[in-house]
Length: 471
Image 1: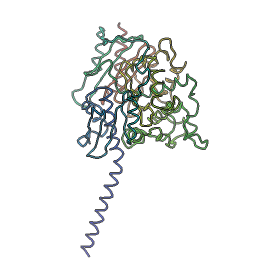
Image 2: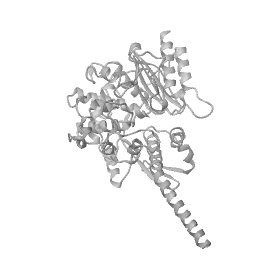
Image 3: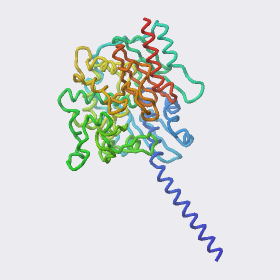
């Protein structure tokens, strides 16, 4: 009897271990696939769009993110220069693949036919994609300032720590009265190097929506034109474009960037990002609560795609003709998912000068030279406060409120004039617009220390304003 009991206990224990292992594996499947997809996608973009060293991209951008450092010994990525693709596995499993296409950057491949979209981009060049006629902010050579205090401000922005977490500033551009007065770049990066803006891309989506509003194709107060929500019995049919822009849609698309969250799944596991987002239920009544999520801007990206023709090439032509060309943005890559929807939440790469030109558009109230790009009042609308937050409509505003913004960051920049507003992205991407100073300051990097995040941007802009006051 005792042997039988021991066998039963051992069998039960074995079954329990197997069940727990299966459960644990199931729970970890999504975050490990997200980690693999993140590695493939960002190394692909960094290598084939920005022209950076893939090992350095991994070390600076990928490995320090979240818990990836703990599993780093298990991660293997392979860069294929001939096929222009990156493949990643974790412990030999969780395989993902990202492929580069000329003019549309890198895209995660979820099924064999997905590569057709990338291949089409290589052969179907967008007419006028390289044309730009916007106001010039500098010549071809890098602008080096003679202002000692301004040089000191740049020195401070590029100063590096001796140990991790590092600051990794890649570029700083200062535009005063419409002209670059100072700029600096890290080794291997120049005036033409496209750099990832992360969530600063949301502000570009704001601009594309604004252009469609100017053209009379959209209205911010209209219900979002999403087919899945059109039944009046569906409470989501009340969600407006304004609420998507202001992050008050109420959709249950929580974003923690942990790999477990719906937003991470949407970006790195779903071939149709907007299709995933549109099926989210409501967690709050539209307009009642602020909750930051990429999902709102992926839905706006689908709205833009459908409004301009429905294809990736239509979006590229529209963005070039209506925004990039008129503002003089020459080195821009807007990336897409496998359905041709732009990732307008976090995936546009542009040179630091181009990000500065974008900021200049908002400094000039939506005008590029004598051409009106954004509708009258759009900049004021974009920089107006949402509920009790430091957020506007696709831009952050310099409003000090209680508590912290997402990821524990402070709201606003306390040492910068209150009229400032800014585009902001992960790892310290900032395009800061200060109307009272006729100033745009761009800071881009791969930062994992507060000195490279909003606190560092606050200090940099304050230092620049002080240095220029002594001019």
